[in-house]
Image 1 (cartoon, rainbow, N blue to C red):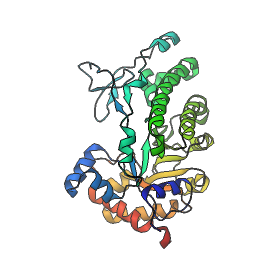
Image 2 (spheres, rainbow, N blue to C red; image 1 turned 90 degrees about the vertical axis):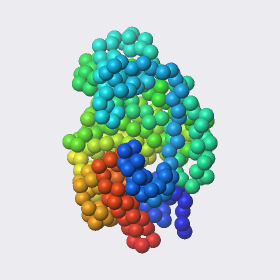
Image 3 (cartoon, one colour; image 1 turned 120 degrees about the vertical axis):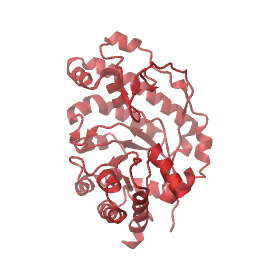
Image 4 (cartoon, one colour; image 1 turned 135 degrees about the horizontal axis):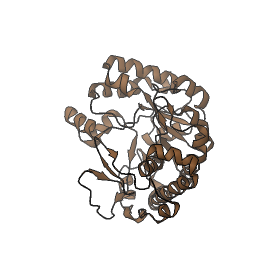
Length: 351
């Protein structure tokens, strides 16, 4: 029986085998513009061509305008100015030398700056066909790095842990309140609370299990519990080699992990599927760099089939690229080859 995209995704999250492996397409703005031009498609036409089973709805920023310094190209709601390629890098760390009182007195953003009244109508426009992602992205780990500086943050975890706790508490207070407003307005038409924090690098986790459990896990669990309170699945985007942290994430109740990078330390797909595949959904795993960017459509097709062979058994898998956004330098024909191969080899009835 042919399922809707939404039914297909929810079956995968339930660790059941749907009709087809669900597809995920996250892409950079530059790649998206290029692909639309090359294929002569609009936004929705491109999503349909790739077979994307997800749609995402956002709150809209409706807060005060901030005046940027001459060196900056953007500013976060937490007062961090940035410059450089893409999202850029922070050019200031406002709380690097702050006392506990100064942290509490800092001008933290108002969750009411985020407008949520549009979300229900936008989600309803998809007529229940697709799995809807919603909630605030909530990158509290990255914001703490921006506010304190990365090395400084690590040092303060040992020398002044109460300061780190205070910064994280204020950050997650903001994010949790924004998401609660979103869910109060539209949870009935949202399926998955999608959040993002990169706790891994190419060489392994950026925090060991002890530090992760002490500082990050309570806040991650708070967001997971918030999603579950509204009967949503919760999926975390997390780059890099973070396998030692997965048991803690599962213990906290996390439902899905995106976007598994098999070329990072510890992220062997067969090991991940064998140890955790019945406990958490994996999303991604098709190598964005060595396969999608640097190979041919024929190689993409073969490698995609190999990943599906490992990951799709028993459900609990969504297929897509191993990075949050497909980059502009990725050949469009390779992305087409990946999604076409998912459609062909991800058919559970043909196994």
